[in-house]
Length: 356
Image (cartoon, rainbow, N blue to C red):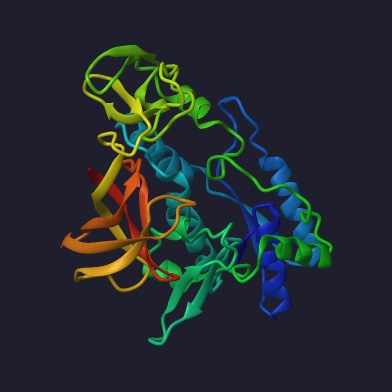
């Protein structure tokens, strides 16, 4: 079963599997409609039309599966709860574990399918122990393994990523070869499955403003803000306070929920709380065997960041401490830390404590 989103990547995933001789069907996950009139484009109807056209071209069965209730309870509520608590959640990572390889996979297995395939830029292979593992996609600009970091072992075994060995231009070339209408369609951006909606507009629709002061690290009031949930650590643009020093920019370094204070400082290497040397991560999830002993591995602190060398120390079940060999900028509580051994994705966890 291919999760056909209406984009070129999943379209080519379906085409390649068909070419390789698999019995392929496809489905579009209807997770969200813009029923609350949030500002922004939610193009699910166009996506369904595009996915339908691709399925017709390939001659494969296609249907729309309604997962809106599961998406609301597992993703939207998680997202809003995180921002209410003053952390920075990652809906795209949770979407993969809870929806694509969670509810959708369970639905597919119930219909007799063995595996679920997606258009992620990642690779899947069977290792020496006979278990399937996830590796970084070959396109360094498109690798999406970070978003798969919280997948569970049984989900990994049933997942396939047909385009992981291709570069993006090659994917579009394959789409052209198969005559797929999505060959020149632009890549989607925005919240996972919700569409072209600004996060600030989305949050405004569901969370009340909680105004407070913008302060310097020594407590001087520099301005006001609408709510801490509109900001994240490391943010430079849109703070609303102009720098009074030539060639120096303000950056968010702390959010104080108790006092509703947004703390800003100059974006410099020695600014307190901007860079961290170690973190605690919880809710650990491993793609294969858990890491039970201290070791030297790599971690990706955020999407599009390079893998960085770390010392990994398990503390308790589901909890570990990581020490960065090089200090990392603007690590935010609630975000995901993805763990690697070279190209192999080991798993991930959620930042809960951060130390300078």
